[in-house]
Image (cartoon, rainbow, N blue to C red; front, side, top):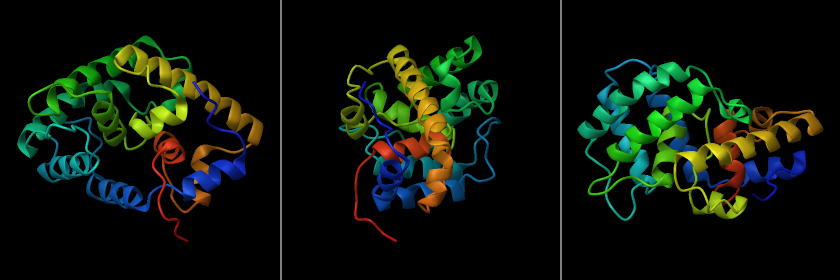
Length: 213
């Protein structure tokens, strides 16, 4: 896996350069889901609808379509049990994940693999985007082509390799934050794009767009 975090100034500029439309999608998501912790069913239909809208905008099931909003609500309801067990775990926990965290991620993976796309199982890109959304940015990044290219992480194809990659990322993150005496969350705030650690990393690695003040 390629080194991804070098200096504070470089990381800050990468966050600022993240595509603005995806920043807006994230703000919309946090607004609609602000009263939902995804740990108790039923998930409100308004949240399921916004989840489906964003997953479609993010082309999470390409070339197939996402399931209907009603079906996605059922998928999100199924995810509440492992998300409750996971609690407040975030990306940093994957440096040394315990059995509970590993098991809950595997359970989430299975739920989203079969519950997101029409006509076939979801791939790592869709599943990791769903996990990013339902954890509200605690666990990321989403492994789309931009992230896989940035990290040389094309080996991430299933739950086991996903967990392995998160572990490698978490280890580098710990080194960066200790060396630079800052956190990724603090840098996202400085960039005017506050986010939890997984989402902040997603902005470091994700698609570039026109920079805005």
